[in-house]
Length: 343
Ligand code: CP3
Image (cartoon, rainbow, N blue to C red; front, side, top):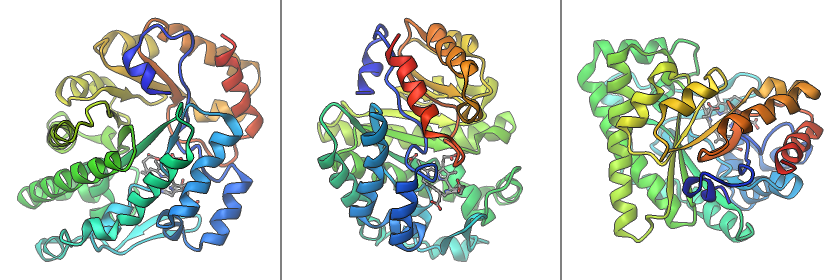
């Protein structure tokens, strides 16, 4: 159970799961993916989503499963046109102004996304009791980089400019998404998710003031609303984990100002630094380089042990610093898990 790590800083070894642990490095994933139709068809098929979520659990015995879905099902369910182009990544017909924002369909949102809730319930049923189920969403800012930009980009130029040029529309969008996402995560918890992760993959390129306005404040509001809803429903054992990827020296500010139970950090972050700059109550999660997992060898063992050594005595979940990549040899995944469990 990865929830043990949120409550205990003296486990004999940290629990383990990997971002994108279900995915293209597994031939059995590719097979189901082929049968499902498009990538979104797979996300909206509770039976297939359950099968691919369970594949890495059955194969590697990870300590947690993560719902198979994508952060972009949210704009899709809000009525935007979303597609995944092979080899290119996601493409959306972007929002350009007030008219497009007013056309977002909030009324039917839960109905449109109900298959995801069904997938959560079905996965929870399939999972053994000692494995936690992680639900997730994209943070408002990261979703807006796609909703305004139409594609992923290295500098998030379109969304960052929109924020400067159209501050009122930006506030309106942040507010809309914070509310929708709080409800969305709450519904995942209601259907069986025990940890809820907020992915802010594009938090890393912002000036201080924009980081506060676009990343910290909306997520603070989202988590506050979510926690109140969870409490009212007796679901306050559910843990909130956040990943403002690339936040660098701003991670501590984020952790102080968003009421999270866990903080995931990327590969570029110094281990001793993050250990010493984040409140000990907050569980840390990270940060093996996905490329070292591809390379393997003795250096992989050394690094895995080093991460565990630095985090000993600390609430800690072992993970990668970003998603597992398609060329990862499965033997290296086994190797990491064995190294950690043999400690
Ligand atoms: O196993 C898991 O981690 C759960 C499933 C999951 C996916 N996407 C499946 C997926 C999760 C948690 C995500 C989150 C996600 N999606 C993020 C945040 C995390 C991060 O990576 O920074 C973002 C930014 C997205 C948007 C997205 N989806 C992109 C940019 C891409 C294309 C890049 C790529 O890796 O192909 C996707 C597609 C995607 N999402 C795939 C998977 C398994 C590959 C699609 C395929 O099978 O064809």
